[in-house]
Length: 123
Image (cartoon, rainbow, N blue to C red; front, top):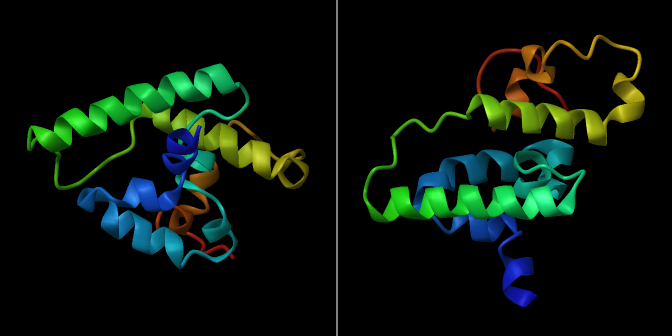
């Protein structure tokens, strides 16, 4: 249980140097700095699904890192985009209930993605 809890922390995610810039950007990101990486990047409506994807993504990252095959520019997958979108809606449900949920939150809120440039900076 303690190892599982530790693996849910941003410090654990940032322990792999390839994520340092993402961690630093997140750490200075307004209200979202109170969230853990898994709050956005893993499915959170179903705990068994959460742990299945945590295992899949964690093993993939571990293998790529140890094989020296991590790309310089890490991009989110289409599956990852869907998870992030669902988590935006889950956390901000009362705010977004009246808007078109067919659009991606990051269409407007681009800087929310680890402070990437462009879009509207949100607080």
